[in-house]
Image (tube, rainbow, N blue to C red; front, side):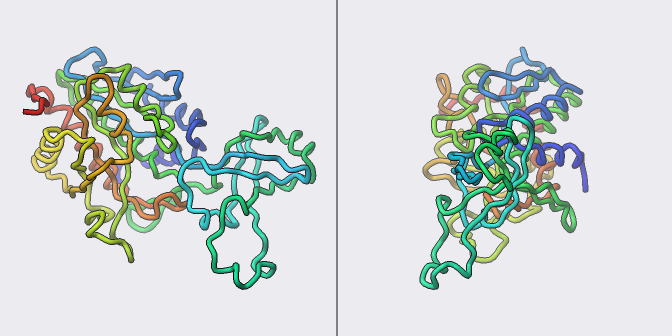
Length: 354
């Protein structure tokens, strides 16, 4: 595999659901400290800057949170009931092993459900609901949960680390979208090495998966007031059965970054991204977003008086499951594209809408 997969693995394995991103954020800032100015904010965003006071200034944003679970009730028998942090398909939760992030450390548990033998035949084919599931950490009482440091409000994640698959493919519960945070930092590392006049700030944004009011992205864009923004996220890979390419486009693992066109993306930013990809022999595909992108771009492009924004995505299989999958080559191709885009800002590009 190309590039620094070891850092990617550290980042993916650090548990950090939306609103509880502290551990992966620390890992991200520690890496950033090796070549850039790094800091955090009260929302939970992490920043790394190269030529922070320069103009033009580019914001490179990838959210660092992951979908997870949160304890909503601790039963007197020691069982934990939970809600989803972000958009889960409850079917993938049944029987999973989890880590509850308690006040005294991580507590292992399993997600329980009534055994199939005890479910009425007419109910077996119905989709399970989260309210019919629970977390069992082995405790026999609510008091024992307290001794373990587990209480209502604690977050939890699926207990599964990154795995390296055939070729350059990797799978993880946190691909969406910790790979975006990884990519923007790798792009900033390249910007630091290539020199130039333009500045760039990489932001590992918080709370995107639950960011109905813009999450951390809105706060970061307002505070930085960049001249242009590039958002990195994942999109659905369509190289698996029963995915309609006519609806979401044709994007395969290993086919390079996906450039979005739509209301939240600035047309000239898209054109410069496409031209930059072609000039640097970076393969890419195009995706349409007729209504919204459902990414940080939706919040950033309307911040302040409006920020010219582009969206670059990575094809991802099995989204919002414990085994999301990407091609590592796509991550580094995307980072190269972002760094080359920042270099082109020295040419004095006008992002007005004529």
